[in-house]
Image 1 (cartoon, one colour):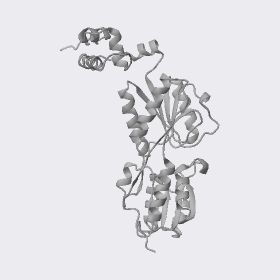
Image 2 (image 1 turned 60 degrees about the vertical axis):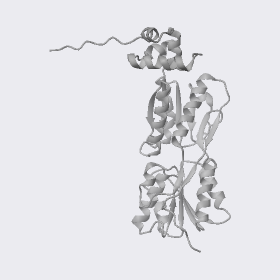
Image 3 (image 1 turned 90 degrees about the vertical axis):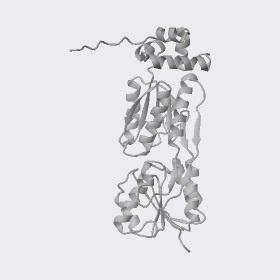
Image 4 (image 1 turned 30 degrees about the vertical axis):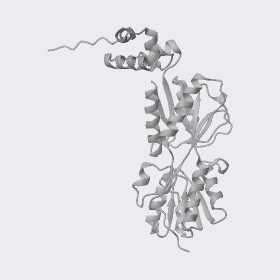
Length: 333
């Protein structure tokens, strides 16, 4: 029988010797720090890759006080928006040498804070929190490590969100331009109206030219509750604005079950541009959020917070775009 001996792992000294640089230069190159030139940095990275060098993260954690692990807390991996965001964040973090620990709160807003605490207990260096409900009573001192929120801002905590007011207004103007004057709304019950920017933008944009005939509060889910189905069944609106694409997909399904033709009898719009939006029937008109850009921005804020713990909080807003598909029809006067 042929035996397989364990290959000796390359060390940082091996990389330094092969690249013709100091151990400190190797450390700078691998950790993206120091003042070495780009040519030297790339040479070190190439040698490390060729030798199969892998940094000892446990030793690094003891030496630097960093675990090189980040936490990501998302509300529901059944919503295609969040796997896309998680993938973008993990890839960006990996490029910076970090591993990501993920917690899915399965749609339970009451599990968000306990999820943060579990990540803290596991020793992650920082957390990106995809928040679904406002926590007005919280402040930066409630966290033991840096936190960046994607969602509703908390005063003093770094935040990334989209220009939801603009997105809501764009949807409202689109429906007005397409001739709709009687509109229903299916919005998220988990978000207070005062914090619900996409709703506020939509209401303001339609105020002068259309009537909001009804608004029903629903979960961020495909399965619409009876109050939403009953509102659709009244057939007293020509268009429905949905708080996100999952709700909009639920509205398309409910309309089909009720015998309401979309878009001939009822136009439907969503928000997010999840992967399903382009493959449902009819394809969904919606607002596209730049998921990759948001993930990169959240990571940048987190890494910047590590470097500058005492800087003021930054609040970043990224732009959105209207994606026009077949779920909206022109309403003739």
